[in-house]
Each structure stands twice: as structure tokens, then as C-alpha cells.
Image (cartoon, rainbow, N blue to C red; front, side, top):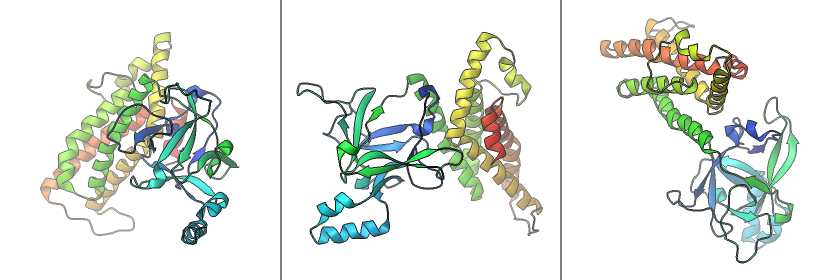
Length: 337
């Protein structure tokens, strides 16, 4: 996983594989990301892009001092000796061009010479960085993630000291659910940025699209046909209000999608949108605290803002409500934010 408040990667133990959340999922990209094909042992290098944050797994020395010593040691011709003693950690990076985001995979099992060299589903692998560091579980860290006992992720120079990990594909049904949030979130983020920057021309262009996306996301969350009209009330949730076996099965699907919306930061984005709507409304009405002069908006834009507050605001609220419906964790998440 990747910590939200820092760049450090961490490991969280799971005892039930069915409850592993999407923050433990990574997209494997070739060095040239537009290329496809099988994953190969040792022959090729790959980047691991975190599913929800879109950050890349990377390895770097634990301190700036180590970085400086590494450069000095290289200049003095002692790089190999220094590298053995240097402490590394696994972090996240936005730099897609950095060599420190490249990794190769080694099989954790003995493989005969005539075996196919590709990585199969549910394979045990050692992960080696381009700076010759193998992934290893570090010390327990109770301060990195609130309320959870997790482990640091460190880089060691010897494969024998590394951690063999199981790499497996996400089931197709779960992939489809995950992809829905991944495709929708950038549209919400772009609209939020334009609205907060008061870029009314681009807000007008994205107004109807974001409204459509929110309504489809709400239907997706509560397992209704995506194009079905919403009533923004109890009628939308009637299909979840019984205790039959069929309804209980639907509720399990809904819980999984609600959980994804929390993990993929969709709930946070919706809350930020509602806050920005309220802030702009108060700026226009001059009802800020402490008092400030109201902002001036031309009539055309004022009409647009009113429409957004009424329609997108309602859709945003209903998406949050449906994401919290009979879901204690999402209710607590919203309450804490």
C-alpha cells in the first residue's frame, strides 16, 4: 500500500484474502507502457502503478545523507562497498521517467531450463529494483496508519534476504467494478478543479457530463441499471429493503462497491465538491465568516452556478448518501471528514 500522508509504502497483513482492499492492488506496466504482452522473469523491467493513488512504486536511500554518500562513493570508486551498507526504503513516486521505479521479477522457486519464462497467475516472486535492492518486510510501524498495525517496506542487497510475494490477478468481476471508479474519478476531479478555480467556461462545458457521471455512479453503487432515472429519495433504495436471499446477495454487491468508493477517494472528492459549492455560494451572497465583500459574477455565470448547486449538488449529496446506506465504515469516514 501507499500511505496518504507520506510517500512511504507499507505492508498490511490480511488474514482473509476476500477482504483485501483495492489499496493493495497495483497495475503492472512495461517500461514502454503502451506495450502489452506476458510478464517475464528477469528479462524485462516493469513499473508498478498503485491502483488508487496512481503513484509508482520506487526505491530510494532512507536519508538525504545516504544519497550524498552514495554519490561521493561512486565518484571515489567505492560504490559497490557503499551500496552493501546503504539502507533503502520503498516509496511512491510521480516520476514516470525515474529509473528507481523500474523492477524486475525473479521466481521464488527453482525453474528448469525448459520451463516457460513467463510469470503465471498466483506465482511467488522476488521483486528487484533497478538499483539492485530486493523488497523485504521491515519493522512493525504503529504510527504510519491510524488504527492499524502495518510494516515498513525496505530494500536489501541480497535476494536471499528478500520477501517472496504471491502475485495474482484480480478476478474479472472485481476488475470491472474497480475500473468503473477509476474511469469516473478523473471527471469529478477535473470538474472540482474548474469550479474551485472559478473557471466558469470549462465548468459550463463539464456541467452535464459530471451530472450524468454522478447519477450513473449512484446507480452502479446501489446495483441499479446505469441509465435508470433517479428519484433522489427512498424509491431508489426500495430494491434493498427486504431480507430475502436475493436481496441479501444484492446487498453484498452494494457493500463491495460502497467500499471501493471509499478506498478510491470518490467519497472524499464528493465531499470536497459540496464544500466548494457552499463556499462559492457564500462568496456570491456575501455571507462568509469573517465577512468579506461578495464576488462579482455576470448574470450568465450566476445562472450556471445556481443550476450546478441545485442539480449537481443534489446528485453529489445522493451519491454520498447511497454510498453510506447501511454501511457503518462509510458513515464514520464521512463523519470524520
